[in-house]
Amino acid sequence: MVTVLNSSRLLVAAAAFGSAAILVGALIFQALGYAPCHLCILQRWPHLVAAILGVAILIFRLPMVTALLGALAALVTAGMGVYHSLVERHLIAGPDTCTAAPVGSMSASDLLAHIQNSPVIRCDEIAWQMFGVTMPNLNALFSLVFAALWLRAFWLARR
Image: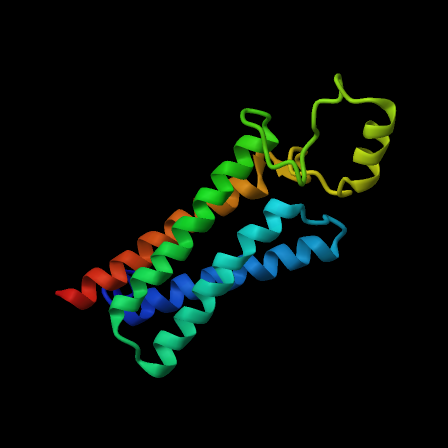
């Protein structure tokens, strides 16, 4: 482990592999019947960017300053994971595209139109959890670890 933490190229590989693993895991959960909500899909894009960036850094020997872009991608998806966690715990309101809207002031026809135009998968419902830890919680946690790996890679290359 010490060798990995002291090699910028291995750190980039670990961070990129981690993002790729998150994507594969999300697709496996999807194949098992856990359909993703809108926020789940959005959290995947920065992981894809980070995985592709890591491969590009390793193959094309891009300057290690590009590792900062990987860190940024990891931090973006970590922030999205925190936001999604707060939405699914009903601590903050989520986007109208995937959460329940208040229906008290809606007419019957407006309510029917809202129901017919609403997505099937809601962001404010927990799709899967283990010991109270949800997929967005795990995404936020692992993404912070990946961001630290990206930043360490950049720092080592600057020394």
